[in-house]
Image (cartoon, rainbow, N blue to C red; front, side, top):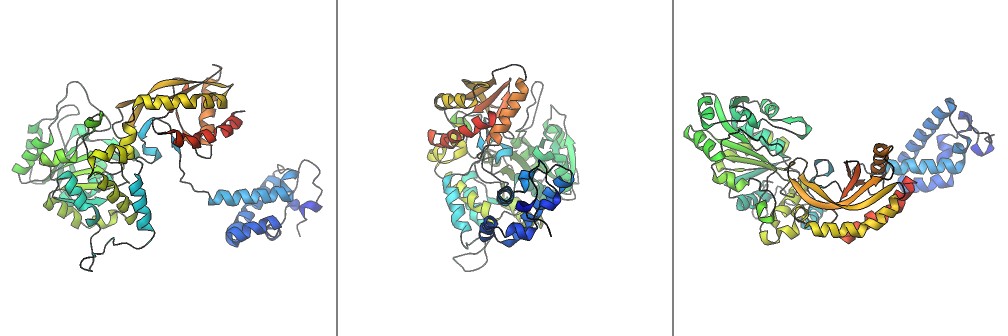
Length: 484
């Protein structure tokens, strides 16, 4: 039988495997009993076994300290393991990168009405596929179709789980086994190695490239149409720009060419703004409304970027084209679940009151924050941050250039402000900045910043008010301790 730790000779610096208790003995201690009462036997016993296995391996390697096998230390280690196992991997963070719609940080924030509607719909049964008027089976697309057609002017609409799925499904439904004509300059790759040629292949269509990287003309499309052509397509290049000697064919021209030959025309907008951003002083993005008016039969775009909703792929267009897409067998595999569908419905309802949109939609509200307001917040926070990082770093309020999105309008810059933190010593500056960034990420509410020009930048565009800043300020003592 294993010896009790308190009975072992553990006065030296090292302990042996025989100094470790059995799993049963460890979980029968009073401290462990509290864990068992709170979390149950399965989890606690499993973590106790894993803990003892790890300590045993240290003992066999001659690396187990005597202090580690004392009852208090064992109980503390067991509680830490249980809490770590239960801690969520998906955590809220403070986005101080300056990128509002950050692909790696969850993209758009949901509006309060969307959060409330989502919670209400998830807390009990709902009429996801039930028609209340008739008492018969319903179609989940009906939850948002009328909203989408009202806002965009489309004849019909359907939704899937993301925009990559929307593009894939549209091509498969309209051109599987046949050819799709696309300008060579629009064969984009976006995040996660999503490449248009690969999507074409996955959808079972044959890609026909026309034009060149920088110049494509109407006659390129006309000459490429053949007996196997099923679809003409345009892809909005929102994540890069070709400048200089360029030429492109707009949707209206492509639609006329397609319709003259009895073919549909589709366009993928990617980001998918539903309002003219230029009205808010932002760079204008093409609207689904514009593309439908130009003659596009299908327009696809995202829900969690400029639209400001949950992850979703939205498909709007003609009754015929959307009807074919909705009936395609692949649609069921790509459909949205009730959770994002509820959030999307509530988000789209906000667009019915456009005069309130800049206030009600977090994405638009953050994008339109005036620079002077952000600078004023930076000036308020600067003294506390300076105290937390001194004497190793200095802090100053600085003008900054943020981004609308890492995948949405990445080349566009947003004038902003924030705190620039620089190492007090030039020697080892890079290592010091990496350590500071890691310390910020390790806080209970992780702070995500960016490093540029030998400084760590805290862009405060996404920290809206003093109240929002309180969780950040409350963590500064922990940051000071981490840097000590």
